[in-house]
Length: 108
Image 1 (cartoon, rainbow, N blue to C red):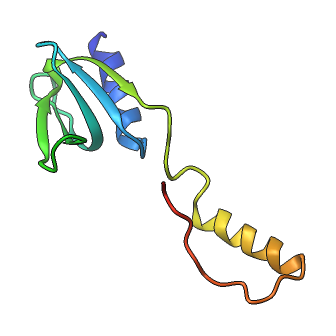
Image 2 (cartoon, rainbow, N blue to C red):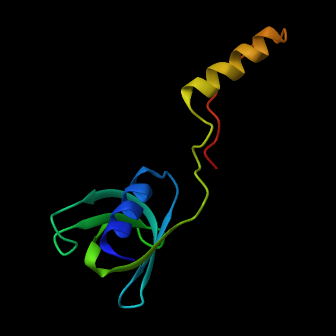
């Protein structure tokens, strides 16, 4: 990836609510939730922060060390917004259902 493509991929991964898979230049693969990015003037000054699936320890990785970045394609919160919940509630109410309880949907 060139630097511009990598920056775009990092922004997409940051906005994505699923897991990301980082392949580092060393060959190491880190998979987990990318929860923060600190973008500097260069890739050497830029970092991403990730919570790996294999360890509950937050890890900082220099963007210059990232060779490839992939998203797992599954956003666990997709379609589970407040607006979607309210729409489903009113659909049930319009269908005549009673005792409609306020229960959140599972995120899987």
